[in-house]
Image 1 (cartoon, helix red, strand yellow):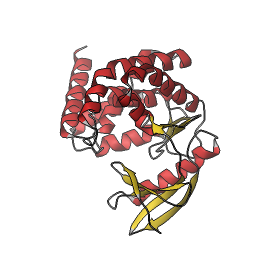
Image 2 (cartoon, one colour):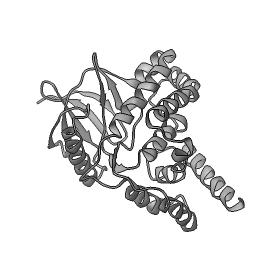
Image 3 (cartoon, helix red, strand yellow):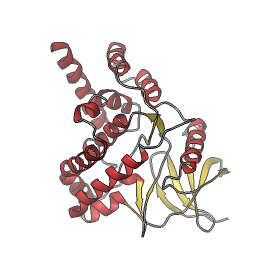
Image 4 (cartoon, one colour):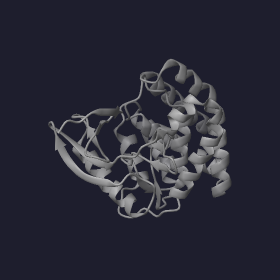
Length: 270
């Protein structure tokens, strides 16, 4: 079978497969346990009736492991925003609505988001042991809940079709507090340094609209959920500490470390 590359990200490449299907083929260095987790979680989420691509099977291809998904024809919300920046507010509201609807589902049989954060914080080499422990003590005081969280919810993982929005990439999904999932989305919308493959014109447009995008997203989510801004911000410190284990640029890593150090110093001084 001849397959054709149609997209790629940090962890995998996406190829056309059989009619109506795609193959998400993971990079060789990506751990098999992570692929198994995505497959299991995607199956679980599909059973909840949420708008995601139908899940096929796991396959081996050219010495690598992949997952077959239904092929959905559409444009990513990120591309729609970057090509028409004046639509950012509308799509930010839609992003919040989709995430709020997802957070109404209980997450049974999948990993704890809080435990995942703790594991990542403990294994990062970018922080001292004292700093890690201080963050973990703060996180212990935060609520343990059982709602479905995506863990990487941003416009690049939302596909707009002719009549619907489809949520992609469930590798990091877990059970937890909606506040932690929202805090993660705010981090990605507001602070994440953009991938190098985004054209310069699009990069400038995204950076210019970020403040408005975050404000519209948060305003809509808080209106739907009734959550207080402080409830969300309490999760920011463990969320950014856990991000240090991801494949991010040195510039972003340094910015996050500085924020962590300043936040902990501020708490000690108060």
